[in-house]
Length: 174
Image (cartoon, rainbow, N blue to C red; front, side, top):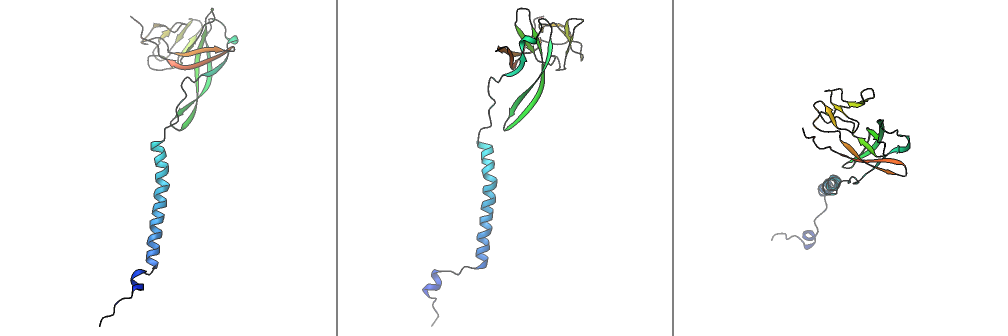
């Protein structure tokens, strides 16, 4: 007669060292997968930080601006790029008219983006790259520039000048 295995030996298999290590390896793989998948899921499916619309930057006191004399002012603005916040330093040309209206021009020429400067002797803005000339109100006098200088949105609150986003100028009619 053959030996028949007992019911006890069939019901409970013995835990082996090999089985323990295989289980441990699966657990470690699961932990590594979770450690990589959770941040990747947040990156892919969570919305990036939105830049606040209508962000205004304080340039300073308007009482120090002389009418009809452009002043180059420096400012620092934070820009949000996805999850990264970048602090950028930039300049702006500010002109106060006799009536008190204030215009802030972007510092790049509208031809190829070179930095222009104010020539007080000529009473005009001059771009040194291709000799575009602009009047004190930003209009093209001569040169290859296709349109007037771009302007920032401006507003005055409590005697302080605030600038917003750049508003591209429209092309001049020939």
